[in-house]
Length: 321
Image (cartoon, rainbow, N blue to C red; front, side):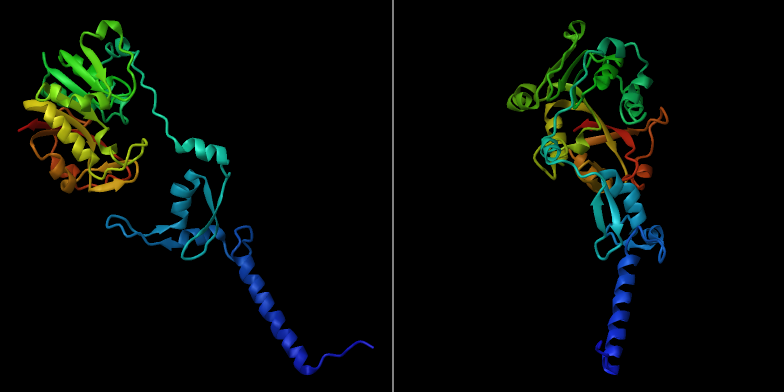
């Protein structure tokens, strides 16, 4: 004869069953595949994570999914707090993880100087970020380089060198990690040297150059993006090195992203009033140029914008004092 449950046991069984169903409901509610209880995408939109950045508001999980997680191979599977639960969209193999750990230097393309010399100066600027390099053309147009010798820092494609020659420079030395294949017809006006060799022989070049130019290079130095050692003031050190080899009164054309001071680690820095004050020490500020107009622009205006999203480049013209 089957055993009969007592009234107390029946109540306990009912209570346990209710607790089980409630727990099961919570489990299903948290899964993205089950949208019968709550819409998963709605939860992504409504879930926010605080950011302690004076320029930024709280960010939603939907924004993180679209602009950070998915672009780096992750997706949100559960809206959990305080840390959301993610999974790999396609988990990389261990072989790929280790091979990508050692970054390779991009090859320099220097066998196109003859072709670039036929381009208009305005078009050469398009070889940089969008057309921001046109600001360098505007700066050199107002501060001519006739019969002057120059130093170029960081140039995988020789658009800065060609632009300098087109504006009258007589001789150019480029500092570059790669061995550059300079066409024979330009070897009397263009040469290259590795950073190590240049550093070991810096006294030879002290107070030598009439001008120096660097576009979208300084802001990366010391952040480790290219495998170099981390150096919080690597950019400041590099500018002072350049200052050492400029003649008194020498001109520095410096292409940088401007805005409110920030570091977009480990990609680049944004230069605002705080860091520019250090960067410009030892120089007299002459003018600032953009890609949009031939005339110099007001520096104060562009330093009030948040540049972390756009990275607009401008060209500073500085004079060694």
